[in-house]
Image (cartoon, rainbow, N blue to C red; front, side, top):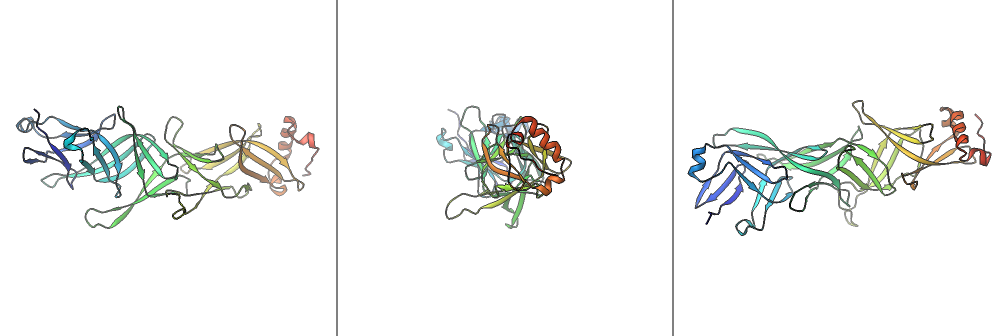
Length: 338
């Protein structure tokens, strides 16, 4: 019968093995396998491993989670009675949010006091839950995926990118230090209920935030769309704290009479949101453009081009294009003097 062992991780991120009344702390480092199991590679001589009947690595299966201090924990598989209450806690920091990975930095220290920094990378995708909180879903090949809840808060920075912030207690001083995580992506508005932040076209990672439009009537001269939503918090009657998210950009027409909102993300990067439209002219000769989604359903947003603002554009070209499409100009007989 094989000998049973009990595993834990000490304060220096070293694996501890309790076996036959003996406690071993083999040198090594943690990593994640392709199917997101936890593996500990031993860095010990063959003779030492033969002495204690140890292989080259230990592989652990279980459920991933983030604890309240933003450390990674693996609740070991309950199918093993010896490990049914075992938890392996890895101390470190989330340092990178890639489109299909979460990167966790760890620091280990051996018995001689030598410190080593390295990274553990989990594969999966980023998403937002129904409370607009950021989650990372850890994919597995043979078990259901695990969802890691990032319980801190997020905001939009000056480059219109999402930045997640969380506090973590220092191991030495116990003082709380603020850490930030940047998400590289761009905004899309495809629904009247969802404001979407996309990492890239080939990635499953995306944030679909629930929102309320703050100002349904927009004026191009201001170049801002405002949304009201709870960001990174649980929505309830007692704790909901609405937040205003502002997206800044420039409105432009094309010859298909599509209206686009160009956003600058810094570092020379720009991206546009293209809308289908419904166009009306009011008694003041202002042009009101209702924005539609890809299925031609209203987004609840109207862009108002005032008479004064249209003078700054090539309004004659705009009206001619509209007449060619026979949307309303010819039919209603409305003419705007410029």
